[in-house]
Length: 570
Image (tube, rainbow, N blue to C red; front, side):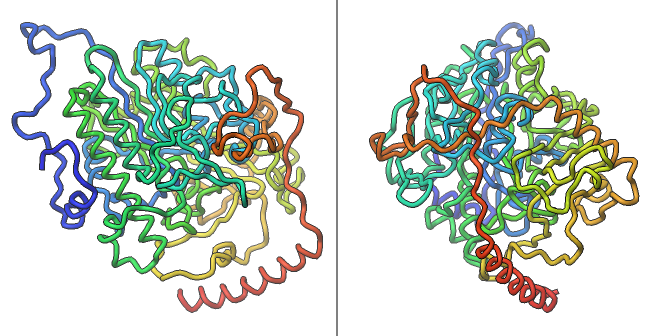
């Protein structure tokens, strides 16, 4: 059992039978502190090794300690022995969460407040921002990234190895086939996307993505001396993002799930759980564990269409309801002062930047100007969080809510604009927050995808909501009419933040990015010396009125049908 690598089949057999235990070290494999050989004299504190796991599209109900149908024994054990973050917030889609983690800044301060970075867009993380790995390099860390980047690659300056990582192995776009590493941005616009440093890594086709990334991390750990230099590893899984693919043996324990998408999705979550197990085992084996901090985080809410689930929270990926922005997260470390507990401290993904820089020995001057807070005291010692407020986002380009207006915003804010803010117990949403139903775990074999777009509520369309999130975490009771005083205060905060926003960076797609013009792979296509033009903003074309009428009639039919079905089901 105490082997460095467990095969997928044997691991899953143990998972399904419930025989797996965390302590695989054995009595003679316990790490020794080098200070023990110094006559009892405590050595000077060393900066900790930092391992950051980021999963993609994993929903609030998609981890064992929140779910009844998905098994994650490793994650459950790590979280139980560490600190579970149960008031932790992320962003509703991929690029924004990654940009905020890497820069410690809200999207409105990086220009990435709208949508994601598409593969053919000449866009990436702004060059003038000093990234988290760059700060850690300054503090003497060896920095490595494995996995999904999704922060732009149109110039070589955008690549992970130019933004603070000593090594990089992974994909640059938002989604690839887990075996072939092909990534498509439309019909006929497909290319290979697996990179080693700044070169295309052609030789890995057929190897399952999550396994390949895990093997690379273990290789880094095996070749690094834990006492010579502190280590930062950012393992950014593509899992459990679509396409829903996993080795067949991981699906066997879930054959009782009737919903096919949920079954495949659950299997992919199990591959992540095994990956985290193998990495943490390697941390122990190679002498890193006793001086390490392990952070686990999701990047956004789950997508029910693809098997994910956020129950009992409202909404899903891509929305500003809690199901889109409330994340699964925990910290596991021997360095925690108060372990085995649940933290209700307010934490946001931007907080990892100053928190990890502080752990690495950096002073406050290295995090000046960021929007995050150092929350290590709240996590490790149970102190109050220094964070009292979160700007979820202000997106001026998102489709404006037809029912919104400056008048409905009390003359303070145009409620047609998509925005959301949390202050203390209160959360305010304006504009169109996205699909806002409560979706229970998928138990039926499946039904037409269009039905997910049809909410059960028949209330008039609104453009402003107020919730007491502490007392109503599921966002069922809108208090905007009862508490106009709170509404006005939060609208004023949106105005304040909007004054600090930089222009949106969302350029038109560049035909030169086509992989067929670049050797069949997604690679940088613009020279570093070429000037950028941020005046061009890509907007979707409006459909003509005939198409809109057809869609309206179709939607009306499905809404009525869905209402009857849901009424019968309830």
